[in-house]
Length: 446
Image 1 (cartoon, one colour):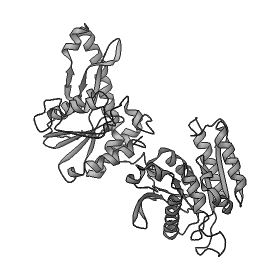
Image 2 (image 1 turned 90 degrees about the horizontal axis):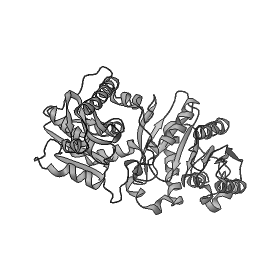
Image 3 (image 1 turned 180 degrees about the horizontal axis):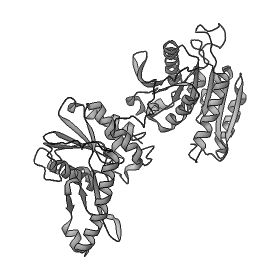
């Protein structure tokens, strides 16, 4: 699964669109799912962001079958042959259009919140969505951009069905018709394509409120708050991207460790981090692997590599903030956190492992004297017992907490929040100031 969420997809897509930086470009996102993707693209290119509003005209008795679509400015595209073959009357089609036109106008008023529409006239319009299934919406969006005066139209998506991408590329090279793009950029075009959501770990529906805030320039998905900043930490010569958030009067900082994916943009990580922020605890969400390294599955289980990088990150954040450090580990990052906690070069005040595989720390478990909380789901019997065995092998204070009704990924309503609150309370108890210089002999050396 190549993308963590829409924001992760947007960042990767932006890297492929770098040639458009500093040009006269406007990013037009297809709401709602295309807006988080477009927000990242627009930010990377330094371009204005707006929505291109289109609505599907569905068959009256089978709405998922598209007869055509409408856009702003009175635009309407209909498949006349399909309308004729299905025997749809002009009155029925007009009724569907009236209903969809009303929804289009509602969205325009809601999303822009009184702001003027960004004109693509004479500019390059980059039409962005979270993926292409049939491509029908994107084709109408291209037509809408051309009707608004765009000099050139580029469609950019993280993933798409090969047939849909090929259809949009028909007019590439400047010979495009009203529904053909001048260029199409698609990061993933898998042969076995069934649905856009298949290629995202998190494909939660984007609410109207999020669209409105992103269009207003508020970084709501990433949870930006006062004290937020993007940072780069070097582990040797390898740059690791992170997001550091330090609330006022923070009493400690928790480093999030995960074996794969972008921890900075993970909604699950952000949710837990927000709980800690409200308790006055700083966080550093860091990607322990580079995007290229993530493609090598063996790296995801390279616990020693992850632990060594976590040590370097810990030294950096301790020097940067002066705060005592704790770890929040998930996946193979749980084992990496426990291994790093035994390293003589760092002082770690508390460790929390939510699910994951702390057992992969192996013989290091017996060296861990740092207060450790393991969190398991009550319905995940196998992992709960594995955590129980792991807990018994730790040398310092250790506790196993079980979240009622939760399974392995804590996907049940309230399960993630319950786990975050358990972690918060553990840090409140154990994340207390410690000297910058560690006492000799506290942990066994590597």
